[in-house]
Length: 96
Image (cartoon, rainbow, N blue to C red):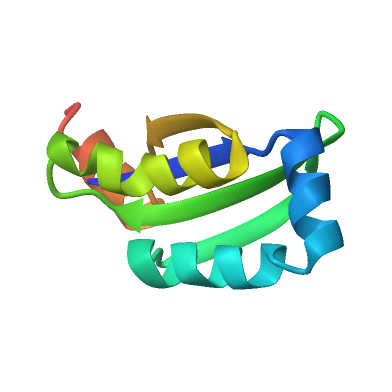
């Protein structure tokens, strides 16, 4: 199932990572581990945020996906099922 993982980083912890020069390496290692199909970064609600689109085959993958953000970045993590255009068309066709 395609999901959106939203990781909202703790400002104090992420400031520490940026100042120490560790943020880029930590994020690269996390993305290499998770292997999202897309990754976007920005400030949402005034906080550093990562938005990752990935395929989660089983709910047991949630610890593998979320823990790097929890343990390394003190992030708030949300996971939400999402669809692309093809998924939406398939779902809507089942309504008939």
